[in-house]
Image 1 (cartoon, rainbow, N blue to C red):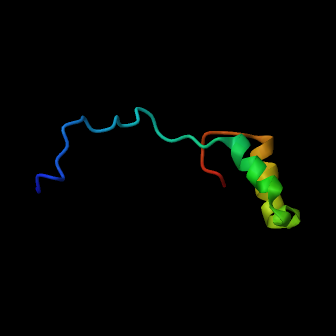
Image 2 (image 1 turned 90 degrees about the vertical axis):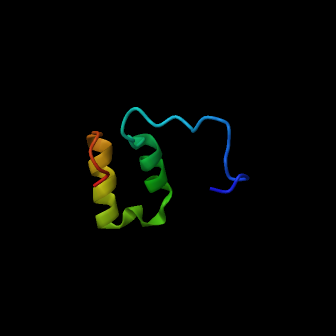
Length: 58
Protein backbone atom coordinates (compact mmCIF):
# COMPACT_ATOMS: atom_id res chain seq x y z
CA UNK A 1 0.00 0.00 0.00
CA UNK A 2 1.43 3.43 -0.90
CA UNK A 3 2.44 5.60 2.05
CA UNK A 4 0.17 8.49 1.01
CA UNK A 5 -2.87 6.20 1.14
CA UNK A 6 -2.33 5.12 4.73
CA UNK A 7 -4.15 7.00 7.43
CA UNK A 8 -3.60 7.09 11.15
CA UNK A 9 -7.21 7.76 12.16
CA UNK A 10 -9.57 4.94 12.99
CA UNK A 11 -12.05 3.65 10.40
CA UNK A 12 -15.67 4.80 10.64
CA UNK A 13 -18.02 2.87 12.90
CA UNK A 14 -20.15 0.18 11.33
CA UNK A 15 -23.93 0.25 11.77
CA UNK A 16 -25.20 -1.87 14.63
CA UNK A 17 -28.62 -2.56 13.11
CA UNK A 18 -30.05 -3.09 9.61
CA UNK A 19 -31.27 -0.16 7.56
CA UNK A 20 -34.91 0.69 8.17
CA UNK A 21 -36.75 2.85 5.63
CA UNK A 22 -38.52 5.99 6.78
CA UNK A 23 -42.13 5.49 5.72
CA UNK A 24 -43.03 9.18 6.04
CA UNK A 25 -40.31 10.19 3.60
CA UNK A 26 -41.40 7.46 1.20
CA UNK A 27 -45.05 8.54 1.33
CA UNK A 28 -44.23 12.22 0.88
CA UNK A 29 -42.10 11.34 -2.14
CA UNK A 30 -44.96 9.38 -3.68
CA UNK A 31 -47.41 12.20 -2.96
CA UNK A 32 -45.31 14.63 -4.98
CA UNK A 33 -45.32 12.41 -8.06
CA UNK A 34 -47.98 13.31 -10.62
CA UNK A 35 -48.28 9.62 -11.46
CA UNK A 36 -49.70 8.81 -8.03
CA UNK A 37 -53.12 8.87 -9.70
CA UNK A 38 -52.08 5.84 -11.76
CA UNK A 39 -53.63 2.66 -10.32
CA UNK A 40 -50.36 0.74 -9.87
CA UNK A 41 -48.64 3.56 -7.99
CA UNK A 42 -51.74 4.46 -6.01
CA UNK A 43 -51.95 0.83 -4.84
CA UNK A 44 -48.40 1.00 -3.47
CA UNK A 45 -49.12 4.33 -1.79
CA UNK A 46 -52.33 3.07 -0.15
CA UNK A 47 -50.73 -0.17 0.97
CA UNK A 48 -47.84 1.60 2.68
CA UNK A 49 -50.07 4.30 4.19
CA UNK A 50 -52.52 1.78 5.63
CA UNK A 51 -49.97 -0.51 7.23
CA UNK A 52 -46.45 0.63 7.83
CA UNK A 53 -44.28 -2.29 8.62
CA UNK A 54 -40.55 -3.09 8.63
CA UNK A 55 -40.61 -5.14 5.44
CA UNK A 56 -39.80 -4.02 1.96
CA UNK A 57 -41.51 -1.10 0.28
CA UNK A 58 -43.67 -3.34 -1.87
